[in-house]
Amino acid sequence: MERYQTFSKNVNYVIDNNNHKIIVPYVEKARKRYRFATEEKILQKQCSKCEKWFEVMRLENGELIDIHNEDEIHLTKSGFISYCKKCTPKKLVSIKEGSDKRLNDSDKCSVYLTELQRRYLKMRAAAVNKPMKELLGEIIDDEIRKNPIGNFL
Image 1 (tube, rainbow, N blue to C red):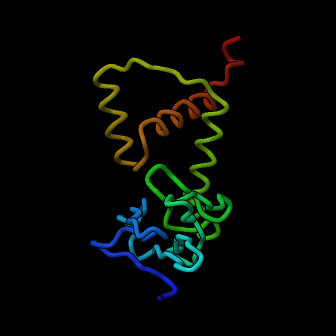
Image 2: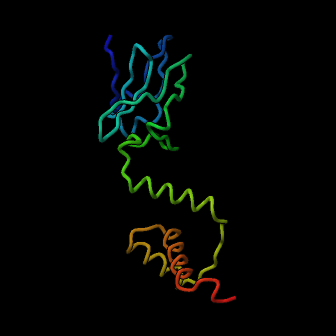
Image 3: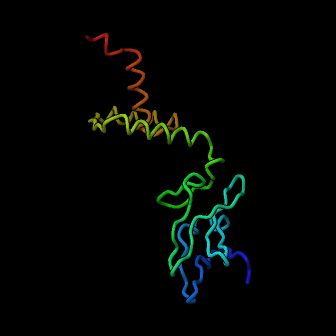
């Protein structure tokens, strides 16, 4: 028996002790970055940059159980990210931390825009390659710096 099972377009499953096929989630988009350690019954994901393998799921009683360590590799709704935490580009980390902070420190606010304002924001956001929400936040931050609230009191 081979030590590792790899995945292909036609093989996106593992076989449990009862010879049942268990479909492995997440491997469709990155088949070459996953392998299954047949003796340990553990699914592993490889970092695209450092190529280190991380244990992410274990086959127990016919089910794949999540065992990943969030400090090593991040799991999203669509699967494990391509890079381990050590290799995650700094830009992605800072954007995530900044957006988490902004969500925790502020209230959600609905704003009604004219068609002209909406088109302007959409075009400017596309020009600077940022989401409209982020751009709008930056515009408001600039306005706060230029016109502190103390000027109006």
